[in-house]
Image (tube, rainbow, N blue to C red; front, top):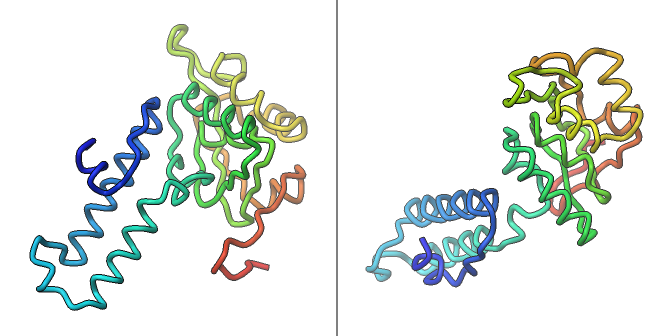
Length: 197
């Protein structure tokens, strides 16, 4: 992967597990786009317009900003310490982070980013964390406490009083609820995306 990334002019960072996963996903998409565009060593087989279209797509996907600042690559959740590192990095930089689409489990930790915004149609899915060492699930596990610590007081109280942190069953809240009821900031429309209002 390092050689192909260097050939594409990509920086090969030395990061943790989530950055490697993100790099693999980006690399996989680049391969699919190159294949889909009919990329081959015989560039004479492609007309000039197709080459420019493929080049534009590759440049957009190869950009580190392509997936930076979005919950989309992390939608299914994962290992809480990995997510807490991302939260810390965004809090240190002050960069905006968008919660969009489906955001399950540990992905909801991104609500702890100071400059977070939530899309109105996002679907955030909360549940209790599971403590592997003690083999139990509930609001008092280390995982649940880590999750709850990243939510604002109103959301934390709502999840606890509603017993939504008692089991591993998902409790879904839409983005507009987080915006209107709990005061999270609504994401401005992305460039090229019409407003949902």
